[in-house]
Length: 201
Length: 66
Image (tube, rainbow over all chains, first blue to last red; front, side, top):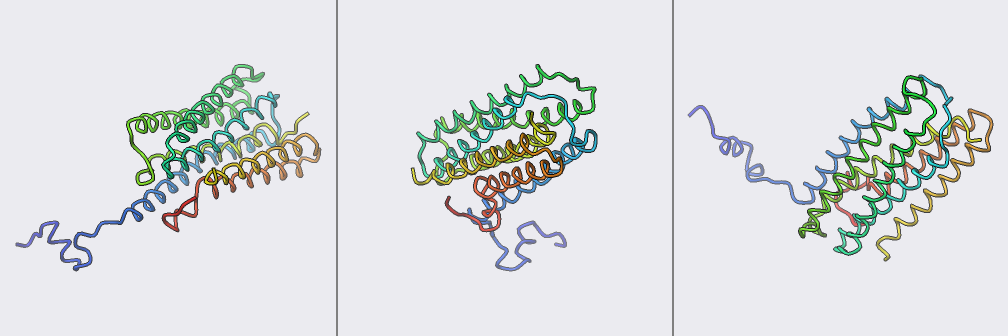
């Protein structure tokens, strides 16, 4: 036969190629690298908006509620600490701590999203103004990521309540937590770009 | 609680650099120095999160405990 079966094709690669599957450790590494590549692509989106803010408005800005901006920044940073605690607890089979840490992370994420919504409602500028265009786009895209992260945490929580995840099976937890930290890193740059570069009176 | 210690140490560092950012924004009147200061503090915070919370080293080292 001129056409070989897939199995025969693999056999032609040599004995080492037959039945080769990545080890669990290799699979985990492949997943991690894949997630980092996703973050890399997301960086272009967030980086574009970041540069547009300075291109359009320079370092100038409209009046923003500094107390609210600082408060939601602290809340998001705290949520990264609780997310780290959640991941660490799962990796060490501390399910009780993991449950609390997950609940706190979800709560803080929702409070952050609520804070952004509040900031939108009290903003003294419109989306038609130069700074407003940058502000509403940057915070809107970022808040959408926060809300999707909360959704992922809820899905992970449902799976955890059904008995999944532990020291031998924690990739979904790790991936979700890494996503959350990435969203936090974006805010670490957005907060000074939107609230601080023009100075605080 | 030893396994969670890194999280709290990083949290304290993040708090310190957030305060540094705010001080730069409120006390420094030179725009270039202010922007450089707040962005540098933000970059350090991001690196702390990427290194300690996102475990970027695991991407090429493979498995590893906290």
